[in-house]
Length: 289
Length: 256
Image (spheres, each protein chain N blue to C red):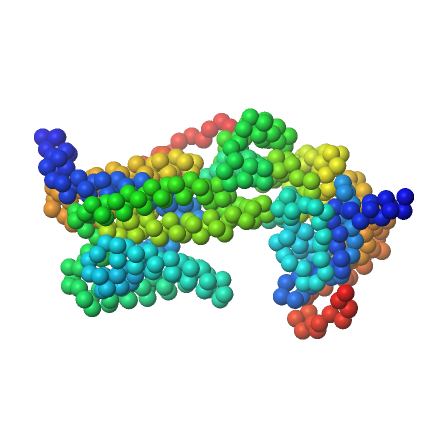
């Protein structure tokens, strides 16, 4: 019975196994990026970037049909262009970076949907927006695994300047020139991971597996390393639980995964040891010192 | 003999040549000339808006001069330890006091260098030196204002810099903390480091700092503290510090 519920869907169906491996790879790569986005108060930037990828992937689709590399390549290019463009505009005008990103992402979303509709059906559009994790093929799996690996390696390389740039950017500037390149590399990782999540979860939900586990982790850990570990674990559980949910309840898989992450988030808001609401509701006597 | 004298005079820690620093062409430090001797302990005194912070930003290379220059004696500006007046520290970031102090090793260890046995010793000694022993594991968000300043001084200790620039380091800090931190400044002076500090507490300056630069956008006086901090000079400094004149014309003093 237990075995039937929790193991059989994966042992019986190859597409479930692929989906699970893909989700686990995403769960390792994306949430650490999300933790840094959250700590830098850039939680919504991920959202904006995810939309920015859409027109690029759509142009890839227009040119080459449902080819993974055309769509991923187009998405990457568009993501980098938007990241650079928003940075340039905020530096050369009085707009803040988040404002110019908001402008960019609305335009990108409209443009992307328009381009997809030029050639594709509504079903194609649904794939673009919400992904098709159950249709991941070998090439897509390799792409997601590769992105997760690159992401972890680059994150390890830029870890120190990234942390210091969050805590005390003035000090980092006074001792090192690494702040700018580290920030650029970090934005690159954001784009890369969103492209990785695009195939599985679509442009609208890819950011969910990045941010929801990251925000969840704040309720469970006090230091950055601990938050990363919690974020990765909760993303992995969401992936597994979401796939099971979608299998048994016959729900669309991408939304089911993000809903699972949302459920863990809600539990954490209520019961998390650091700042969970239940600790506010339970009056405890203050300590002696 | 004459040559040796010239050589010695030609090698101060840093030299300002007709230095003008400012924002949007408006000078905040105007036509400053002079040299900071190796190992000097200098107080920069002047009313708010006198250009003290601006001068420091110029010294550490965060602000390019509008005119003139700052020459450093064989030292990269990144090797100057700088404590800004209001450090833009995100106090909600989950980092421990220990890790924050360890960041002082950046110049020595860089992006990837490991932190070894001697470094642990230096970090612990610095934390003990500012009286924060026992706070190593605390996150920085839990520190009081004075403890925060102690932690930043510990990071300065770890930085082990030849030149240290402190922008109003004792503002909004209680007497005990400022006494402890002033003791560190004295120790740095004893170790032959060059220390520049912007200060408002005239009594403290007279007690601790042998040399003073009185600044009111333009230098009012620079020299031994007791000659600089006369009531004449101080009231002159107050008069000279008025607001930006939005319609100011280009400065008439010839650029050299």
